[in-house]
Amino acid sequence: MGDISTQEKPTVIVTGFGPFASHTVNSSWVAVQEMDRTGGLGDDVNLVVQEIPVAYEIVKERIPNLWTNYQPKLVVHVGVSGIAKELTLEQMAHNDGYDKLDVRGCVPSAQCCRLDVAAPSCLVSAIDMSRVCEAVKKSGCGVDAVLSFDPGRYLCDFIYYTSLSVDRTRSAFIHVPPLNRPYSAQQLAAAIRVAVRAMLDQLSERGDA
Image 1 (spheres, rainbow, N blue to C red):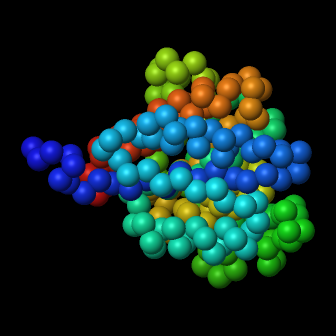
Image 2 (cartoon, rainbow, N blue to C red):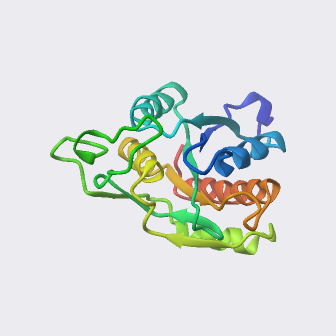
């Protein structure tokens, strides 16, 4: 085996959201930054982190560009949920029903992510989130995890559907609770790291480059 420094490292993109509504400090971006600051995903992965504004049009423009520019092995979006008490692994996303105003006071055209007739009403990630959930629970990171099939018909759902539309085999979404309700940024960062590594393990098992 060659030294890892001489090999092409896989790129993983992890995004968090900016402030919105009562979330003047968005725990998703704080946790993603903390994960990046404390070792990222390890020396064998090129981690790219991005803060995404809570705006439909910015998501529609920026997310496909990230896929094109970085050719990532995996894209993981992280968002905050005011009702979450655990790390919440989302299995699927929706195309329609986006009637909540973003930070610019806008909703997408026809309240849809994609307007083309062929766009499925739902897209399901090929990553088995139940397995990721179990990996977090067994890791000893101190954060509980649950599986979900409803990302909420807001920017979290919207950004997830956007990435699933690009490649559903290597897209994922994680909801985190607000900071200190009950987990600190350090705990959330550790749990996200475990979850993302578990996703990479699945991709390796099925031979994805």
